[in-house]
Length: 479
Image (cartoon, rainbow, N blue to C red):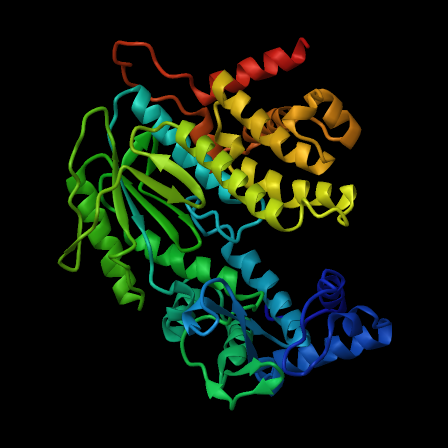
């Protein structure tokens, strides 16, 4: 990995640049880089190699331009703004080349429990893993104690000295480590508001926001903390031991008892503190999945974490009794709230074309309504509710109401929209196929194939997700 940067590496990164990216301190836009010919790419490659061999980068590559973006609330309150950092695009090309080299070293070492910022993985992997473990635990009456851990400003608190040591532990060294460090040496930022710029100020801690390198550096840093927290009895599911699930800094700790979970949390908190991180006791919560009510009093630094009956993890609501119905109802409610907001503003405007309204339906309404649908086990009740929510929006798009007494199928046909239920079911089957094809060793695939080797208690079991999908595939096959 100490070989010079090739023109092919630079050309591949430039080709993947998005045209809409805002420029950094050097005001170089992505269009300038994408329009470069062979000679231009040769000079950019030469610049990257000068930085690579010398261990020093241009000042503009170390400078971040912070632009405050309003979220919601009072415009006069600073906490209602979120700052985004704009970096030099040539510097980001260099960072992306380094990122690819770092990932080729650390990717195979990062444990399966981490799904954040990794190729071929996403939130659905972690959501399905947790849902499947909870489903199996409830069916076989195996208790699970969970702690949903929130880390305070995790991205901004990473100590750089500890980060360099972590990278060396994972095999990143030599020219590559020096190149990464050069981007952080004398790193500065300024704030830009309405064309006015503040003075430069140093940034001595945390990862660089907006840098292509930061995600892989962060998950490597978190993987080290997670590894060092092991050694405590955890949840065993189908022969697979699972003590934690991570998506970047979203952490779930799992154990079969409250005492084991307290030991695991204590180790995790100690490793976080040693690495310069801090657990937010006000936002971290515990939950117990058990057929009878069980108390779980966990402590961090003398403070007791609240125990809850439901928790929203990665945007999906998980219940202590393991049911999914409440989450589907919540999705429908969220989509309906968006529909009401849009109806008061843009959807009902006559000057808005039907094509634009359909674009709103596809890009805003449907994603909100169907997020996490891969986990759903739909009943006749939920099917009816989803269809009602879908048609409520489509009638507004078509300029109709229930009083017009137009069939749902006629409305869909007129708009050229397929039934949402069909779209959801097709996507669920696609996810099922993805699980079947997962290679051995992938945690999500292992959990999918696992079957607890314990006796099921008496009584009618709930419909399993796998059974629901099998029936769905059978129905679609013969219709």
